[in-house]
Image 1 (cartoon, rainbow, N blue to C red):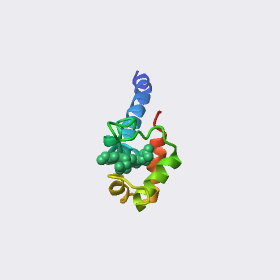
Image 2 (image 1 turned 120 degrees about the horizontal axis):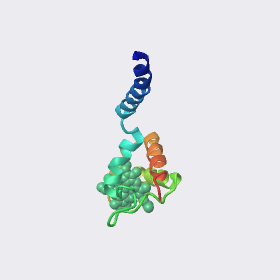
Image 3 (image 1 turned 180 degrees about the vertical axis):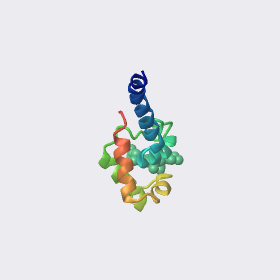
Image 4 (image 1 turned 90 degrees about the horizontal axis):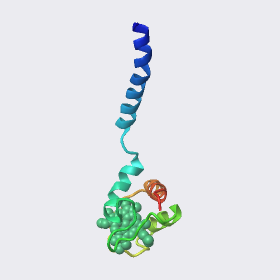
Length: 103
Ligand code: HEC
């Protein structure tokens, strides 16, 4: 009897531990950073009002724009201020995450 209970509860326990564990990890660094971009660019990066969509851009487009904004080579109203504090590594993470959002 005890054995049967143990056998039926064990997989449930494993699942519970596994799922709370993956929840505790929370959003990835890329997801976390991108959430601040999506406030302006729209929840699915589809653009909002006059803010351009990002979901149709390629990784290289986003990366190049961000680096252009960061260095000031690409003129902007707001993106220069935002981009300047992101490292190149973070820009790559952001570009990969955002480009992978559905079109
Ligand atoms: C405060 C609103 C705001 C936030 C936050 C914001 N953006 Fe932007 N983004 C803009 C605006 C406005 C433009 C148009 C360029 C300009 O005037 O700054 C733009 C342009 C861009 C472009 C160029 C798009 C194109 O089609 O040329 C990229 C790429 C971009 N943003 C990426 C990002 C990323 C990545 C983040 C997060 C790190 C971010 N943006 C956060 C407002 C925002």
